[in-house]
Amino acid sequence: MRKLQMVDLKSQYEKIKQTVDTSIQEVLDTNTYINGPKVHEFQKSLEDYLGVKHVIPCANGTDALQIAMMGLGLQPGDEVITADFTFAATVEVIALLQLTPVLVDVDMVNMNISLDGIRKAITPKTKAIVPVHLFGRAANMDAIMEIAKEHNLYVIEDNAQAIGANFTSRDGVKRKVGTIGHVGATSFFPSKNLGCYGDGGAIFTNDDALAHTIRGVVNHGMYVRYHHDVVGVNSRLDSIQAAVLNAKLPLLDEYNAARQDAARKYSKAFEGHKNIIAPMICDSCDCHVFHQYTLRIIDADRNALLDHLVSKGIPCAIYYPIPLHSQKAYADTRYKEEDFPVTNQLVQEVISLPMHTELDDEQIKFITNSVLEYFS
Image (cartoon, rainbow, N blue to C red; front, side, top):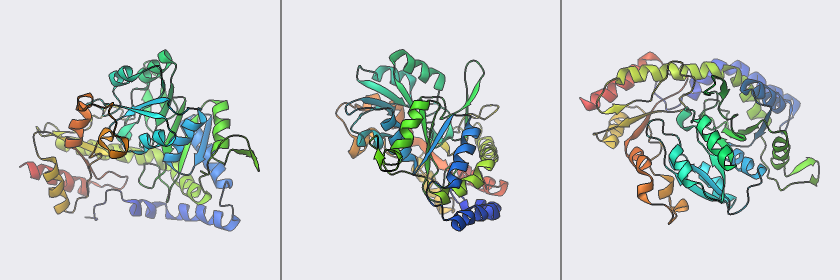
């Protein structure tokens, strides 16, 4: 059996080595390292894939979120609602811009932001909602957009973990997550479903005026060289990373399908187990692209299971061990523990197993047998 990896980028690269190497060599040959043809090629290809009018590449996913908020013109003191159970980057950029983060609980079934939590958190100072499509599962964008419309709020989709996932609206129309709100942001960190070989990110929108503003923000506020029309930052996707992404984007649906297939096999093995709650997998499975495959362990010692798996050479992780409302950087007297019952439970129960495009049946069987062995 091949050595188990949480994310096996080496094996993935070996399958696409010639395409990736050729694409990178073209950048080296032309010396177009910043805003070169490869960046523009990737931008257009991603616009076509997502069905969105504007993709603005940038340096990383955290920048993408920050720039989206800058583009919307949010002001210090404006309140921005987001989920308590997620990676810190989502709330980090809110704080960096001197906006007021408002953390709310998540839903126990899908681990995405609680709709009731959003409704209860809205005040006259609320200006935006940031749903996170956690672990690759689409949040309920119909309901979120309805709440936003009712209260005249912006919706900024944090799509760092769910690129390629679909959300099917009540009218049956499918749209790619990240393209439904006023603006979306994603990350191309190497371990993502669509990852480069360094840092990278992008912002998506169908709003022409917002796209124009954001294009200035990512490039020092310039539309014409040395003419600074808006306050900006230096956040550009470099051409070598775009070259890698150009090689991988045509394979994204195949990669996501491989993750979905692995998830089905995992969940089949755990079906009906009294101590294991596996992720829900719908019939079509296109609403979840399994950036992470995350179990909930109930009436058992999750940490001891982690130790057991590590002892057998199985990498695994806890995403996330500490709620954002309990982090020193984001602690606030506004938050009460009773406001976050689901998040506080999940941090004690969740464990993520290896999930990537190169998982094979032998590896999945070894992992699932090892999990079940712990409970026997």
